[in-house]
Image (cartoon, rainbow, N blue to C red; front, top):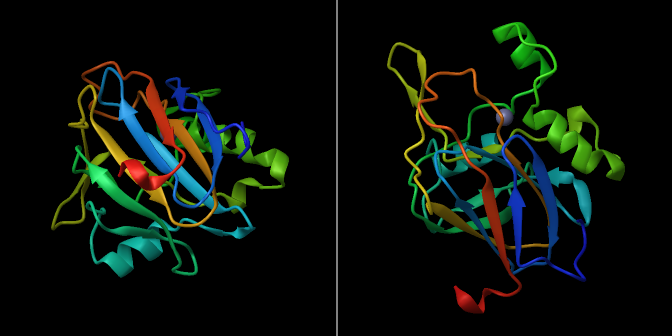
Amino acid sequence: MLAYDALPKSVIVPVGYGRAIRVPAGTLVTIEQTTGYQIVDFIAFRDDDLTEKLSTSHTLASLGRMWPIAGQRLLSNRRTPLLELVEDTAGRHDLTMAACDPWRYEIDFGVSGHRNCSDNFLELFGPLGIERHDLPNPVNFFQKTIYGDDGQVGFLEPSAGPGSHVILRALVPLLLGFSACPMDLNPPRERTPGDIVVRIAASDDQA
Ligand SMILES: [Zn+2]
């Protein structure tokens, strides 16, 4: 599904799985909850240079914020603005956590063979020559993390209910990766997460 020629109008990202889309500059990308409370790991590479990619740590530092708000831009590892957060009905995201990977489940939770976002991205981008160490840390859309003055990190239930969404505008041609995070072991998981829908608008004239 990495093609400009037939940009899909929408893509379902099933819980626990990933999808990738190649988009030209100006594309509006909506990431929307279906039944709600699902965290979406999101990564991006420049289409013309896969060594330049969305960087959460560069974005966090340059924004001076733990998560972006509408109107702000997400930066690359060379601080190039790659995407603008156009609209955000959730209001809470995370720029600090690595994608879940096989070792997260095996070492931290004692579970082998669990689906994970890192493998999802590797399946999507591996055919392009991307290896695991090339994957950037994701923007964890809808993830509600809290940071105490004592250094403790807390994971709260996402407050993004059904229909909650973010809209991004691609500022340069990009390869985008989405993973509907399969994490079901980290507290609290009070609700059963659902699929994510990604909607694509070919130009920004609907912004
Ligand atoms: Zn995950």
